[in-house]
Image 1 (spheres, rainbow, N blue to C red):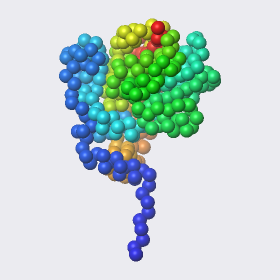
Image 2 (cartoon, rainbow, N blue to C red):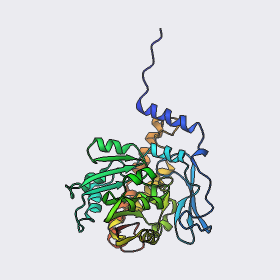
Image 3 (tube, rainbow, N blue to C red):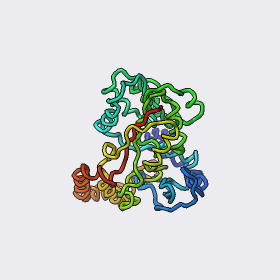
Image 4 (cartoon, rainbow, N blue to C red):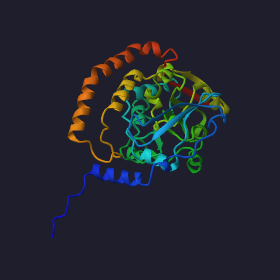
Amino acid sequence: MPPTSPDPTAAERRRAACFAELALGTARFHAPRRAGCPWCGSARLLTRFTAPDLLHHKPGTFTLDECRDCGHTFLNPPLSPEGLAFHHRYPHDPRPGRRRLRAAARALLPFPEPESWLDVGTGDAHFPQAARELFPYTAFDGVDPTHRVLGARAAGRIEEAYVGHLAAPDLSARLRARYDVVSLLHHLDRTPAPRAEIRAAVTALRPGGHLLLEAPDPQCVFARLLGKWWLPHTLPRHLHLIPLDNLRRELESHGCTIVTADHRPAHRPHDLSTAVSLAVSHVLPAPDTPWRPTAPTPLQQTVRTAFRCAALPLTAAAGAADHTLAPLLRRTRFANAYRIIARRT
């Protein structure tokens, strides 16, 4: 008998599974194009740009539209359920810094210590892990569309884990009025139905409980200047970008009082450096990803590494400018994100 071939590596198996999905076509990953704004219903839409996935290099091109009436910015056509499942199956978001996570949790220190806290879109639950250092007697739970939340529970970062969207009727009913704090940190921009998630988050709060929200601001000046190279514009990673005033009015319509709404603590000093990094990566040979037909050749890897090393001084200079200007920019319309704390009354 001829010798059996060795088992494929994990990367090869992942690549084979990915291409089995892609062989069915990518058109099914897109729902029909919207004729109106998903936030206010206006038909006065303006296309900001059409671009490929500049961050993760996933196949296809994507279009970002903006509503001329309310400013809501969204992926159009939106992802279908199959598209959402595909892109959730291959997440590549870097782990957020512990210092930033602690800073977000510290915003709740002026309020009574919560008994229970739900983190929505928790992923691997690094935020509850960081927040527990400041709130050691709080029970943290997490909900996420992916099964990563189950691994987070197994690792002891959260106590209860729920797979799916908080707006799902069965989950929303199950968690009604159960939590003192619900956090949605850069989650609304990645969910297909942000208004439904907001409703469900308010429903999960006990009277007097607090919502902690952070989101990128599509009205940031950098969004206009950098266009598709602005990190929150990378598609299809972000599905909805909600102006601060829209979110404020939505929360008030659900019986919430806005305690704070500020850009300064949520600004992340990375606009210029990530724009340079994305532009450099765009002109280089594609990296090794599960959706690439073959792994890069040694020559392609060498070229990519050499160009990245050559671009390091430019990226470093842009990063230095980001951090040097941050104290000023976070107080202006250049601030790229905002934080809201709202109380359910």
